[in-house]
Amino acid sequence: MNFPYCQQKTEQRQYRIKVYVITLILKIKLEFYKLLFIIVNSLKIAGMRNLSKLLVFIGLISVAGCSIGPDWELTGVEGRRPWFHPQPYGTVYIPTGTYHSGQSDQDIFNSYIAPNKQVSIHAMWMDDTEITNNEYRQFVYYVIDSIARFMVGEEPLIKEIETVDESYEVIDYDEYSSTDFKEFEEELVDMYYRPEERYNHKRQIDIRKVWYDYQWVDLKSAASDNYWESDRRNHIKKQKVRIYPDTLCWIRDFAFSYNDPMARVYFYHPKYDDYPVVGVNWHQANAFCDWRTRIMQIHWERQGEPLTEEWRLPTEFEWEYAARGDRDNNMYPWGGPYTRNSKGCFMANFKPNRGNYMDDGGMYPVRADRYFPNDYGLYNMAGNVAEWTINAYAEHTMQFAHDLNPDYRVDATQDKFPDPEDYLTQSRKVIRGGSWKDVAYFIQNGSRSYEYQDTSRSYVGFRCVQTYIGRSALDKL
Image (tube, rainbow, N blue to C red; front, side, top):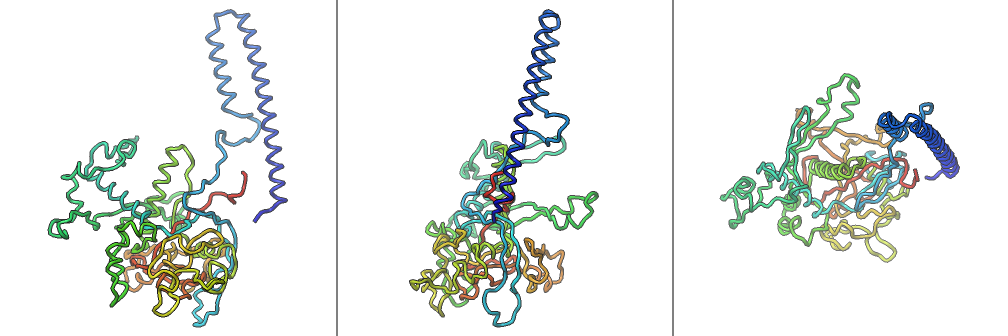
């Protein structure tokens, strides 16, 4: 939302500040030149005896004049340039706004798991499509290459960083762009399946060894601790996740159903490169977000630019807000209460009729950019594949969640919840949007469902968001 009067007043104030600063700089330069004139006259009088001292004095005055402002005004730290949040590739801007969350249809079963509630959401960048097979494959290849480099353990594959109080090893991509597996065949023999596990003697990477290690900071835990006396080690969490997709979910999800070809080719074959990745559990989706953040931050550090916010899964309220596409109380992302358009064509990939999966044009998932986007430019916010959110699932979340950026998370580990039933309950994570195998109810904007965090499905994928830094992308300053 724009505020013309407030914006005009802000621009007038900024203009006055600019005029004042320019005038001040001109006055400082004038005084500097006066001082320089006095020094030159002194040189003529003093001769060349004190020339070196005077030159040093001139240099100090010059440096001081360039580095500090007037000591009678509060100017802030100098040298900080204006910064605008760059738009990440493949994303759309979701502006700050408010909406009514919850069901847009009658709650026939009186479940009360999605009652209406008005909430406000901060601006963000969101992927315009679900993460695709080929995008996730980039992550898998990066991890495989990283593991191979540390197994070899030699330059130029890795380099050692030494500081005053710490030393560690990092991957050296500046000197060596990719690992040649044939060159280090003996060192990397443990990355492959053992001969007795190989099918038709094919030498393939053992996906059980493709692990991704990362750390994250539990800010909510830190906030509940003593701010000045807390030990940061207590709030730095370490994760180790197997990241290769579960391709056998195509067979496991459907009893007495022949989906073996999808298990064999869906993630591997180039025909499905632009289709949404599935068979990825909640932990794997978070690991992908961390990797995406890491490579992005490395880029900004090399450019000498400020870091942007981290990539993450959206909260379920952010997801619903984006799905509604700047509309309120609309049942589906396209706005209308019907699943067909005026020409009788289905608007999403779901299960429209009993046993007729192809009536909407897709029997399984379709390309991530198929069907019309919503008013924000987001594809397949209804149907195709359901999407992970960052939030834990509770039937009464709407009742206790805040109305400002609502968020409910549970770090569900077996150490925290030793009781199996309690752990199972706490490990539920919200999924939104419905999928290609769901009926129309589940693809509504307000419908909520869940899957367990360590479960992978052939109908669940994800997309990432990045919180926008600033008030609005439309602001000039």
